[in-house]
Structure formats: structure tokens, C-alpha cells
Amino acid sequence: MIILQNNKFVKKALVDANGPFGRGEGIFETLRTHNKHPSLLELHLNRLFNSAKKINLKIEYDEKEIEKMIKKVTKKSPHKTQRVKIIATSSDLIITSIEAKIDKKIYSGVSIKSINLQRNMPEIKSLSYLPSFLAHENALKEGFFDALLVDDSTDVYEGAYSNIFWFEGDILYTRKDKVLPGTIRETIFKNTKFKIKFKTIKLKDIKKQKEIFLTQSVNLVVPVIKIDQTVINKGRVGVNTKEIIEEVNLLLFSSSL
Image 1: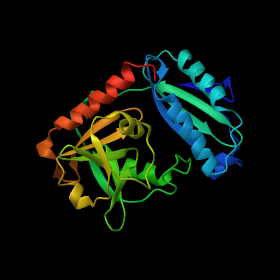
Image 2: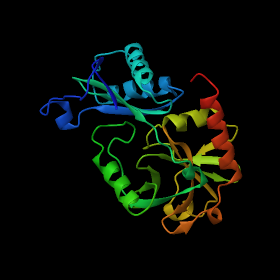
Image 3: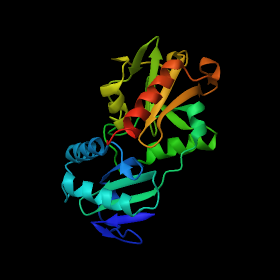
Image 4: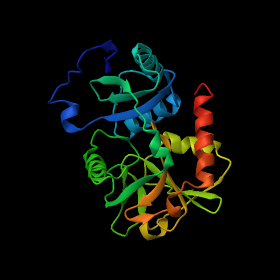
């Protein structure tokens, strides 16, 4: 692992246990590199500073300085495809990089488990991330790829570690608010050829849809072929979902984003 703490390479990040880490007072971003180039860096940095503003967190470095630090880290790593994490608190800025090991089998479809949970302050990536972490770990232990968060009324929100979309015909749907503004989500909004509409959907109704997918910063677009015990589209990835995957891959891997 490559670690940069306050613009200095270190073997281990040292933090004050009585400081912001001990309170969960901080934010983070996770992004992917392609050929050591950070993907969607501007979107990630914009979200980082928007999140900071929402919790009145002052980051000691500006966007340009952090951008230079990220590129310093990604250049030092021996891996072309990296998982880069940025952690910001009032006292520290820590950037880490590890190899992004992506299992290509997920693009043939994954299963997700519904869990009754709503994230606190879902619009930001807060260090107070325990509920999402536990939901995700619970899903993994039962053989699922991620947890699908629903409320007491079974309204669908997002994945513990992902955003969720579904098609109704050729129209692409997702929830409008009370979810994380994911960077791949935003990229699809701005670039897809499909018409997009916002909608609130019940768990029982999303299980009836033929095309569902998740978006994540590292894995990008991941088709869903099973929710709980309900098989989606006979376990096959839909044609429109395949087009979304191609759109995102083409944009990220053939551009200088």
C-alpha cells in the first residue's frame, strides 16, 4: 500500500485517537485509476469539498493541491489499475493506493440482499460509515455482492456500497434524492443516450423489473440478476444494461478523464 499523509509518504498513517478520527468527523472518497490515471478526478474532488461544506469541515489543502498529491501517489504505485482512497479530517489528509483487483465475473451479473437500513447523511461519504459497512458485510457473508437498502415502507434507496438503476422498457430510472450522488451515476446522467427519469420504487416492484444494475467508482457498472431469492430476467444481463456498460467503459478508458 502507498500512503501519503499531509503530503508526506509514510509507512503507516498515524492519527490522534482523541481527534476527529475518534469522533468519525471526516469524509472520504474512493476512486479508480486506468493506466495510473485517476478516473473522474474532478467529480470526486468536487464531491469531497461539497461533503466538507455540509459538515463544516475545513480541509487544509485546496483542490489543485490534492490533485497533485493524488497523482504523486498513483505515479509511485507499481499498479496500473488502483483503488485510491482520500480521507479528509480537520487535522489530516491521507491518500492511499492499493491494487484494484476486479473480478470480471461480476459483469455477468450479481445477487444483492435487501436490508432494512437508511444511511445517516446519505449525500456524503462520511467516516461514520458503520451501518453501511455492517450491511455490506452481512450481505457478503451470505454470498451476495452488496446490500440493497430499503426503509420500513420497503422503498428502495441504494446499495450499501453502490447506487442502483433499473430499466422500464428503454427508460432508465433511479431514485432522485436521499442517496449518494455517485460519480458513475453522475457520469451516466451526463452521457447516456437513454432517457432518464427519477422514481421511488418498492422492493416488490423492483424485483419485477427485467434490467437492474449497480454503479460503483471502482467496479463501474455491475448488472444485477438476483435480489434476495428473486431471479431477474432469468439470470441474464439485459441488452440496455450492456449498452450502459459499453458507454461508461468507452468514456472512461478512451478519454483523459
